[in-house]
Length: 408
Image (cartoon, rainbow, N blue to C red; front, side, top):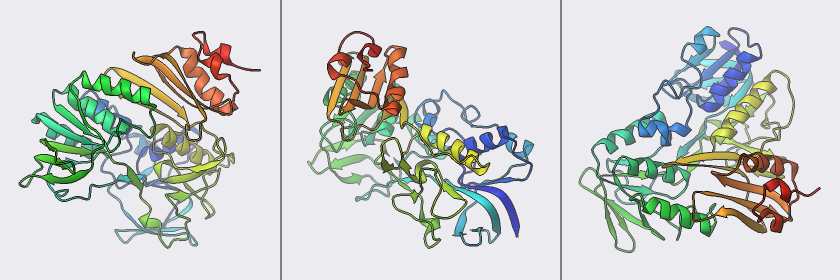
């Protein structure tokens, strides 16, 4: 049986950035094996709903490391490779091919898969989801000849896909379960701004909508709502959330609960086995709560952290949750966790494309959103959240620089 010092199960961003970190820290030839179910070497996922989907980024440009990076550093990367089972006690992975692979240290990074629609007609052709580069290519192909599309879901994936499709001249209807876009995250004023921005660019909204069925002969031709409304479309993109891929770890002894449960060091309940990225349910020491994050920055940072842990750097994972999004000609960023906030402060003109929103809990900044704001606000957001900075809401509301709101 072959053995590898380090193994990563999953070929996404965690693997790409962990490999890069290990190489920069002196990885020896033959020490690392990556087992990937993908058909391509690790690539960035954010462009799949942005630049790559729009045709601005190429497959080459979104790779984390060039393909020859792996053989150059004697990294054994196995594509289209499925793991069947994990034996923690003996530190052995059983592959679908029948091969067994031993390891000393392991990162579990199988990521997540999209939740699927489960209504009549959900097996029709033309109903698409977005997770992989192949998914993005399928949406591109459908968009090339489409006039109308329905996007199910009003979160960041739905918003990004709708924006790209609208810019391709497709009449897009966004189907929202709630009464406004991204209600779980946006304030009413934020939702109002984005809905107006999208509407002015040809996107329609079906709000407080419940899907009844998808209709078509072989391929989807319309989305039918329980209200009776019938939304014609040439294809559907559903962005209704994801589920962590944990099946392979069932009965392995790994603690699984909404992902693989890890501590503040990203280590599981099994020695030498870590989890990172969308899969990892980790103990967030900043907010003193358990969380699982499905964003690019988290996968990058946790992959790098696990690589350092492999090499003996035992430190807790301390990280301000972060994500960014590009829609139409807008770019925005978000830091922190707004849940539990007792006050929300808005800065700038909420009817314009330049504003920021700050969530406070007992006068401490716990989350911030910025769009086209001064650099000082972008700098302050993660710093204030990590330092648990106290600020006065009244001062933060003022027109002066955010630094003037800082309290000693």
